[in-house]
Length: 186
Image (tube, rainbow, N blue to C red; front, side, top):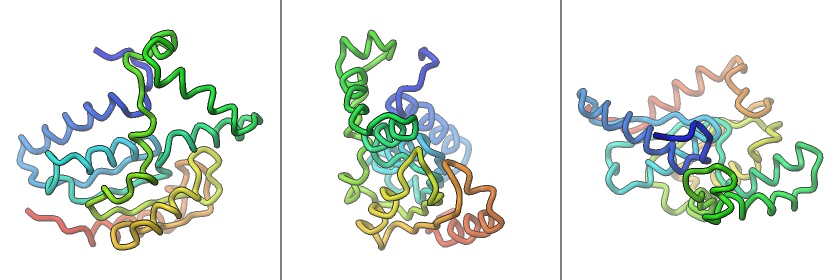
């Protein structure tokens, strides 16, 4: 049983894996994962899982966390702190004793969520929906991720802040057209 506290996607991935298993047990052959913010980090973890290869066939990532370290720094800046203060959070998340003091069930290895470094592991078609005004999850990371995997990643930019692209008039059309391009087998 979880603590009810966010673990940055490290343990929440098990919940999404259970949902994928449930879908498969009930007739789904393939799935497309749609992840918002931290949910995008979770979706990427599952898409890279060799046990789900061929099952997870596409990703739609809204305002994705592509690198927790950069995201923590961005949120420090958004809060009026210098970006370097984010370095203080890392030991509290990653070291066993400090993570226990922080009331995390387990240490969180933030580097496993660095999809800029892990871009070559992406093996499914992905579309990123990201607001250029996002002060929480850096838009520049989505641009970089796309440039590393232009054959796998599409990027749709919106004039929006974090997780607010859905307010755009063109959001639904973009999602619908991009998903229809994924290779789905029935």
